Length: 369
Image 1 (tube, one colour):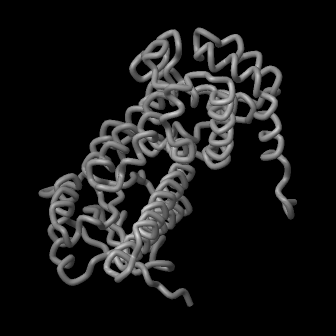
Image 2: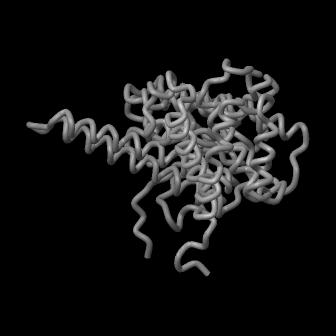
Image 3: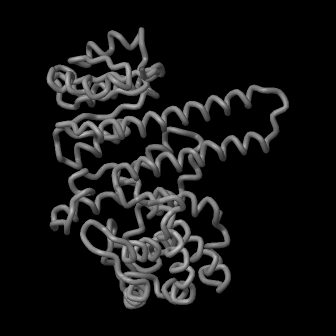
């Protein structure tokens, strides 16, 4: 028998949806269902859930109004809310994320995906609460040194970056090892920049470790992209490509909102730059702002090379991987159009380290079949 320790509230005016959610979740969680926002608020004074699944389109009080009221109340503003929707509109998702929702799940429900999403978000919420409690306990203890407090802050920061990156991975199956590889490629580039005195005035002022850590959030905006596009086998249509290009602005907006809602968010400055600028191109033909040359933030120019190299050398749903040498040739040919020429020259010096790490990551894990 499973020990149910977590409570889920489901709010939807459709009885069939409530029944299906209850059937899927009840084996693992304590589930309470409500057919309106008004009924939800009647019980919140007595019982606070670990997470709320909230329909958007409901009569009298829609999901946006419900989440607004939840976020205005200090007793409920920390409850994670996932919107339920049948809409395919990215604008609907952006509005929901702006209101404070942490994710979207589309109807009709696919049981394994629903369970996996809840598991990931509950893990994030639990870890966040645990770390905050640890920090509070230490701050109220006598004799806590500044060094210990800083260690606690670093612990929260590291956990936040890791758990958010994990959430993105649940949306995009390529993202997990992609993140680890691009972080290493960025480290190789940054070390090379220092060694060869390339943009040394800028790179010397940056925190290398924090830069590498927060690069893991460069694709955070994919949280706001439709599952049907992220998981589509084969090439995207022009319309679908236009939708996926929105992930840069969505990522910037998500990080900005996190920064506005917490005092411990200065470490996200690099992350926001990575998120919004890594698809800009040197000749101005990139997105989302069509920046050109050195108007593109340096971090975006660095990530562009790391991101493209990784995409070229690994399978995607729409294409097969190509060789390291061919990938190097493509990046070299993109000098002055896609990529910063100075960084391409550096890449041509250090690409052997890229290949070495790629091959290391691609080796079968010990014990794998």
